[in-house]
Image (cartoon, rainbow, N blue to C red; front, side, top):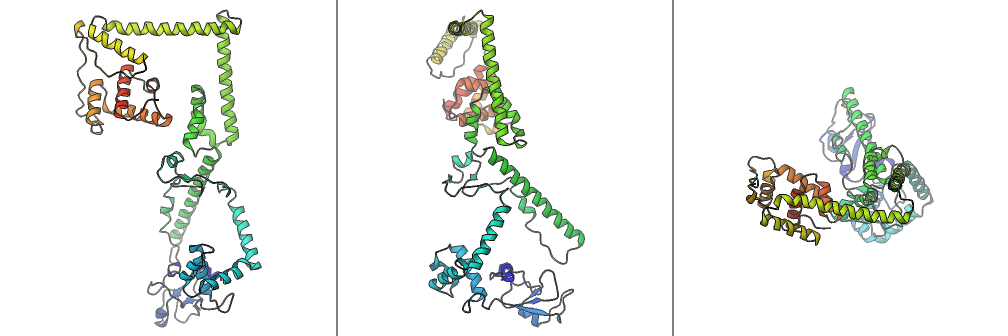
Length: 445
């Protein structure tokens, strides 16, 4: 049975005939003196007395066939192997399809023989149990655990959930695309034969060792992803956003060190710094109250309210400074006031170009996009926007992608968030934001 496990009933499982390279069909001949790899010949080459290198026609030989009983007189070894392969292909209990695949036994005979010799046989049961325990002990440190009682999500390929989970399939504890996904390509054509020189044999062994190291790196990365809960990217980003901006920056900087410490230690480190930041901010607020001469929390509330009013007044004065450049042009001033009123009402104003011809100042001419890199990636409306706003196509594409990513991550985008994300002139940011809203690229939060 050990020999039959190595060379099954499928001809593709056996090495080809060394004489004619055809697929071996039982019975065939195995040389008893050549080795360690088996030297196999079909009956036609054997009768012709085929010889090759060390193999001679007068060597001792064995006739390889599985036409003999193993467990029961009425079942040959070939039928035993065919039964096991059919059960593996069709599933346990599907005896009708198992018998159809075997073609030499009916479903009652297949079921009775399998239950008697492979399920209720004490020898086979103990052997299978030991093999299962050895396999579990061997993979205990590398396999991602999964409880059969759980009902994991099964996202369809290329769905939103599948992309959020980076192609991870919980039912298989595997990814659609692994790290170093094509590592096996360097190994697929390697074949160890007796004719290899010592140098070639050593090179093949080195390739196999390199492949094993790549597999270890793949398992190490998968373990980090599992232990730190990095599979569901959207949930991970939501947890990140609960921290203040300063702690988020620290989190991003320290993420690369998560592989050094365990997940609990890493979370404790981040939480301790978040607590430290909150304490420092509270201490700074209390120091501000003390410098202002405040000695009670009731007075602190009044101070905060007056401080907010003062900030609003400062913003209004800033807006007045902005409008002074248009004050001598009645039409431009009216447009500016209408735009600010729309902003205060929560309405997105229409993008308009404010000219100041009455003061002698002219608006800049449209930007010439000829020859600028990235122009070919823009449609006609985007080209017109870049010309009016005087923004090179490469910068526009970069800003557009940043806004799209932020909108996709948060489910919507406000103008204030866009201005915080794009550090350019606020008027240009507004025009880009309004254009993307109008064209349907992003949506308002």
